Image (tube, rainbow, N blue to C red; front, top):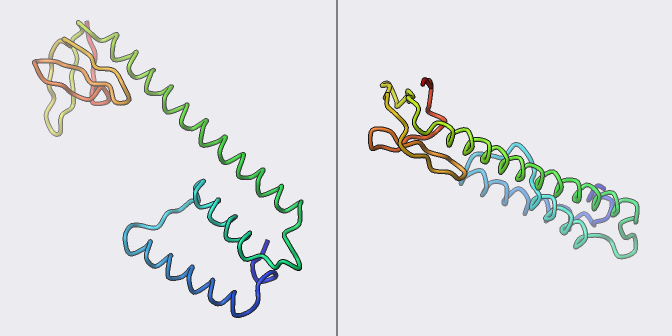
Length: 144
């Protein structure tokens, strides 16, 4: 739905000005986002509802389509979150299997070698060797 069909010229120019100011404030604080998220979608939908012409409200089909898009976005967000949890569990399981094995860990320009004494689990599992903890993702070689 295009906003210029439901708003008067003065309202439209005022809204566009507010949008430009808002975008400028976002760009000055951080790098611009390349994709819209759930909150952005809701803000757009609420803005459309607030500024619609009461004599020509948004058609039911358009509203249902936008709500379906929001529902799909929400489901994809949830799936992504669950995949992140699954990846974390897989990494933790793989790290736990390394206890007692000799590994090499890439730490900057140097490689640290030792026997894994302990493993921490969680979102970012770590392995303990030679008394120090290293990220599991930094393990580059595993041997018996």
